[in-house]
Image (cartoon, rainbow, N blue to C red):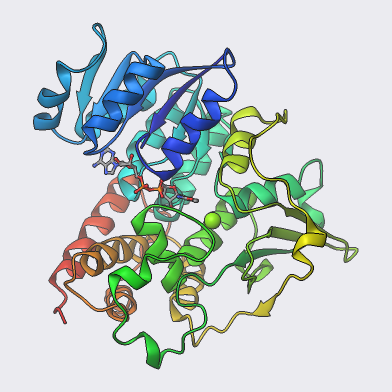
Length: 382
Ligand code: NAD
Ligand code: MG
């Protein structure tokens, strides 16, 4: 029996993780659930999965949820609650499915406590990849990718010698505005941006897909997870999201992982690795599809991807700032304070004003993250 804690259990990845768990009775026990604001769903999940600890975003929500949980459930809140849900239970496995660099300290705490990580929260690796990977190595903790592209690469690399990789290729669907020109992006609405063609995901990552920031975060995530240099990571557009990513080796053999787009497959593989179990997902029939399409990435159409590569190559706090500026910019776009194309302006201007620190400590990361947030918040609107 695997004992699991889920940070962000009420979100897109969190609910799908619980769905995977519910398909395999007797295999998993849920030790802790942490969510943000969605009290009714957390209560429902707690009644069903009987975690020992439940955490919510604030003290007020903790007071609200207390009386509604099964007796004996401990209620926690805030960042300390997330850290306790991550590290202060009997769980041997933690799924990090909250959004943003808020996940950093809880993830580090879980690793420090020796728990394996099912990693969805990519912003953590972007913000402080060296701290997370160094600590995981030191503590002998596995970081199992949930992101579909990284799960694909992880599967392609199974048993391979990493020094024999020639190139890692991440596929990108292109997001909701894939077929629009830059001129057509000037006045797009929040509603348009939230319509992803292939995946149903949380709001922040859906916007990140439209700006191509998501693929930028994934490039940096791949750098840290697989130790690949930025010169050996490539991104191409693949509108169907069937080939989830691939690896080319020095002999020019390419190994790819394919499947219909359904996050329950990579979530389950991260949970059951190295085993594979049945899933209730739709099998892929290539003859039914007939054709798949691939095209070159256009960095002038998607400048955020270029900024991600540049900040990855600069290293240190540059990626912390890239991530934090984007988090604020996306939140401001979702609130109607800025236009779509201003997301990239905010990231660009925040990065340009930043003096990156190499090999930063946790305190320096937290400081750079706060500085970037403040600057991105202060950026003029509309
Ligand atoms: P989501 O917005 O659907 O869910 C986020 C979760 O975090 C929710 O449970 C929410 O309640 C919780 N949360 C928010 N603020 C919180 C706070 N202050 N304290 C505690 N909990 C808080 O997001 P998602 O789409 O599930 O994405 C989660 C992570 O997984 C992101 O890092 C995303 O990039 C990554 N990811 C998601 C997908 C996907 O298909 N959704 C795919 C790959 C990677
Ligand atoms: Mg992905």
